[in-house]
Image (cartoon, helix red, strand yellow):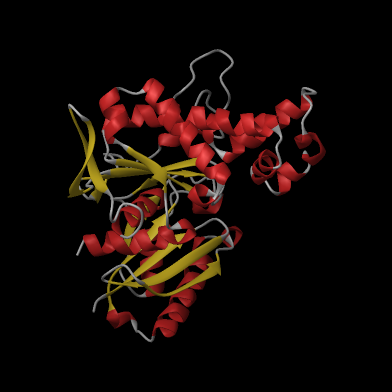
Amino acid sequence: MKYYLGIDLGGTNTKIGILDENGTIVAKGSVPTHIQEGPEAACQRIAGGVDEVLKQAGLTRADIAKAGLASAGPMDIPGRTLRETANLGEKWKYCPIADMMSEACGIYLEFANDASAAAFAEYWVGKGKDAKKHTVNQQGVVTLDKPITSMVLLTLGTGIGCGIIINKMVYDGEHSQGGEYGHALIDTTPNARICGCGRPGHYEAYGSATAVISRTKEIIDSGVKTSLAARRADLDEIGAKVVAEEAQNGDEVAMQIILDTAKYLAIGIVTLMHTIDPDAIYLGGAMTFGGNESELGRTFIKAIRDEIKVRALPTCSATTIVDFAALGGDAGFIGAAGIAKAME
């Protein structure tokens, strides 16, 4: 049995895991990143975390066949370097993080975008593992006994992350920016909402948790009658979960905010369908409103699918699976290990 190490570098915590060749987690752990101390200190702390996870698994570095590091972008993947990093801070700009982490950990680490890693994880051992291609004939949609070979993962949270799988492998683009779909343009009007990057009309400004919070505050401040008004302060502490809770309690305004978000997300998904034509598009991250296990989550995904049917070419709508992802917060380190395995 071969073993693979995955590290998912985060702004608050860094997750570490060891998987076997079948993608089963053997051991995992987490260490605080403490980004304010800079990358050198973080690499040493994370290396200590790797030691702990190896000990937990009863393995040594010599037992690791390949290892991978996932981090948020923007980045230069061939150059193994971070670029301007909004979530890590000034000390991390243009840092050769992959080489620094490899040296600290004593093992060579392949380098990947965290959204791409999460997408590969879903493809390898998550929702995409047993998914089958759809095709259309004269009688309608037929499910074939063929595994999917392409998919997109959208991670919904503070922003919108995007990982793309084409022909069973991650697509990063020519300049490592291929998955920056959160900055796709969906609104060109003069009053377009401003994205966190400072530019108007981007996908994140409409479909992210940050956008939900911003729109909710605007609605409350306009004087609309809603139970959300009594919880305005909670939006800064709990975030979009406040809107979900009030929607579940029957507040019509909260439900409309969620349905509007579904519409915005569908608009971006339709463009992905028409550009990439993937077998599947999965939604993950913190803002899935409970996913398929929740009535609200099922309402949310149905609203997205219904909007797609209105806007997409019929063949794209019929052949593209649109569903929630399955792996949650472990997807980053699983995918980092999986990408490393794929590069053996």
